[in-house]
Length: 120
Length: 177
Image (tube, rainbow over all chains, first blue to last red; front, side, top):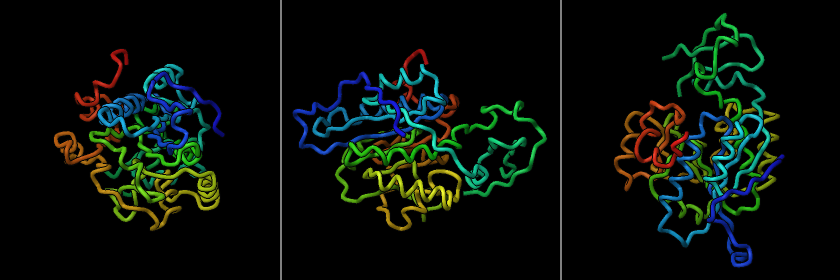
């Protein structure tokens, strides 16, 4: 189900010939909506910042994305921020009504009704 | 965790935008399960897109535990799935996929499914690795970065929220955004 792999523009990536004996580590996040793009970009920037002085640890930064639900512009910006951007299929929620347990307002994908939280 | 009491609205879908709902992503959170298929990595630190690291986290790659996470602030018996240290495996993805199709997720999201899958078999990380948003902890985490490792903002996309508009986060965003 992994469908597309975009190689990012960032330079902190493995050189296979010199690191074949090292275990591969990765920071991974997921973006399924454009509205969370600032969060993903801030995460990538902060990871680089907090590990700036720690060159001993070799890792990649990976962003899983769902191309069907994202603007192409978002994916382009992610490619600049992450080592690797991987396109995946959405795993849909088979029973969306259970989302109500999260205490959130939900819009059911199939029903005609909009549900609001009245618990605040 | 507060149970949601709901009423049905006569509004049609067309009158209710994602902006009103506020969390258009919730029906796609199970997509997170794909992280277990990244078998090219021996160890992965998964971070939700609303997590802001404020101290190094890379030492967690050295954890011996197969699965580690931080207790949920609303329900500490279970872990919060916004920060997880895990070892990928196709078999693990298949187990989760089967569990999803047979039992489903008891909270409708990835956190319920992942907790059902792990049961008590998870290593508990300190709370400071995932200071999920409450009025106190989010701001404290930013003021005391030597104590806290990462801070979260569940409404990261909302411009008015303090975390993402703080200097510590804004500097990472392109000016055109």
